[in-house]
Amino acid sequence: MARITLVQGDITEQDVDAIVNAANSSLLGGGGVDGAIHRRGGPAILDECRRLRAERYPDGLPTGRAVATTAGDLPARWVIHAVGPVYSRSEDRSGLLASCHAESLRVADELGARIVAFPAISTGVYRYPVEEAAEVAVGAVADAETEVEEVRFVLFDEPTYRSFERALQEARR
Ligand code: AR6
Image 1: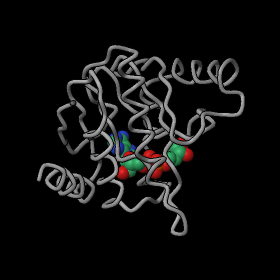
Image 2: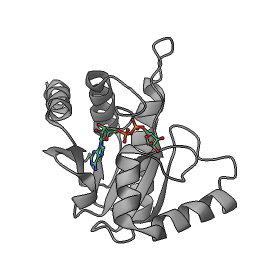
Image 3: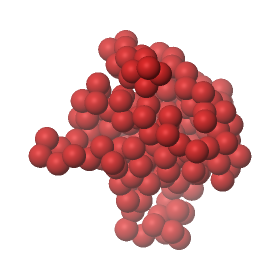
């Protein structure tokens, strides 16, 4: 089981084996953490995303799934693009949110990544309530059978950091 750690900061600065991107199905970029990763990582990431679309995912990467590319100019070696669900009040999409964490770790295992950083997937543009998302994310990572040694959640702001801290305390009880 991977050790879970938390830091407040910018995921693009993390010197880890792989960072996870909160992507969308198109894999062609967007705002939030996705925009920051493509901006800081340079064009090599988008080139590989375009190739993945053409060769493996002509209809896009389904929600709940993950796929790796180079990390371009970032300190990390790989970016694992994961597609979280858009939050819905009428439908429970926590299974999809858990799945994109489990799938990211499966991809990390294929790469041989040992330290993997995750942002708070789905809690920005996709509007998932942070408290709920933190519980799902921490639970999914804690349940995963993986060779990854450390999963580092990199939380952009203090309220998100606090939510993950609470979720981690709950999970350890
Ligand atoms: N480092 C760490 N966390 C960050 C950073 C950063 N540099 N920048 C933002 N965050 P979001 P989503 C936090 O919107 O909700 C994009 O357009 C942010 O504060 O990036 O999964 C994609 O292309 C929030 O807590 O991702 C998709 O279309 C968290 O990252 C869509 O947004 C996630 O916010 C995905 O939406």
